[in-house]
Image (cartoon, rainbow, N blue to C red):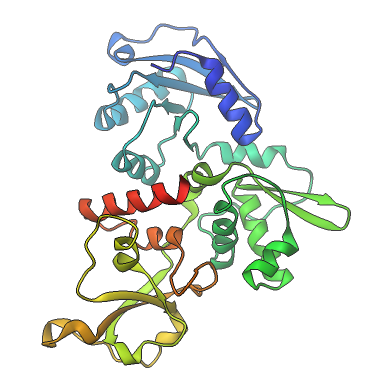
Amino acid sequence: MITKTQDIETYLDDTLGLQARAGELGRKLPAYLRKGCKHFVLLVEGHSFVAAVFDAGSFNLAAYKKQRRELEELTGLPAIAVLPSVTPYQRRTLVSEGISFVVPGSQLFVPALGAVFAERRAATPLPAPVQELSPAAQLVLLDLIYPGDDAPQQQMTIADRLGFDAMKTSRGVRQLEAAGLVDVTKCGRANMVRPRCAGKVLWEAAQPFLKNPARHEVCVFREEVPPGSAVAGETFVSRRSDLAEGAILTRAAPSSALRGLKALDPSWVEDSSGMIYLQGWIYDPAILGKRGEADPLSVALTLRDVEDERLQAAVFQMLEGVFS
């Protein structure tokens, strides 16, 4: 069991730069809620949560959904599950249903902290709360995730790296700031952008805001694939995991490049070796891609909602390589 509340306090402070303090709950909860876990109050920048700290192997997702509602009703506080580990399935379900959880030292997903972030900013007005990132903002965020640290970067350096103009980059950064994912400060005349957490933790925290870049997919003859397309989809994952490569390869291109292409039905073609599944993306996969391939985080987003355990295990294996 995670017994040291100081570990959680330190993790929140080191990861998010937020002052966190843990204290006694002040009331005894029913025995069925206390089985396999203990509870305490977590105060983050003046906002209170009730934390449920689970023993290793005692967390049951279906049971916790019900317990969480009862816990919040009894305490009047939003609940956070503090877990020693989380499976890919549990993580996807928790994130998709907006259930807060922390794996100290590894993962963090607490949507309510977005409001805390906003309160700590200076008087500079922010855009309306973000539900989903624009393509430009998503590219800026993914670009910030890959280095694996939270070092501040000049906004113009990010723009140059992505090939964006100043206005496009500024709008993207403002969205990330409104979502509570980055801080923006002035250093002389330059805007400095600093992620509020780093690497895998930032990736997990951003999940509610990220969207599938693949707008649509068609099957075309290989010679019709537009120049500059990138390896993507299951083909990309198979080259970074134990997944077997499919008979028809997958590539991606900007959505505009698919205009006028005639979609084929692969079941009507005897020889599929000359065919390609071509995805149309909301941004150019070459921006973050390398050596004719898309970037792994964008590819993972295109497969996030595919209900195939074999494929999801391969995506998990691929992401472990990204964040190792």
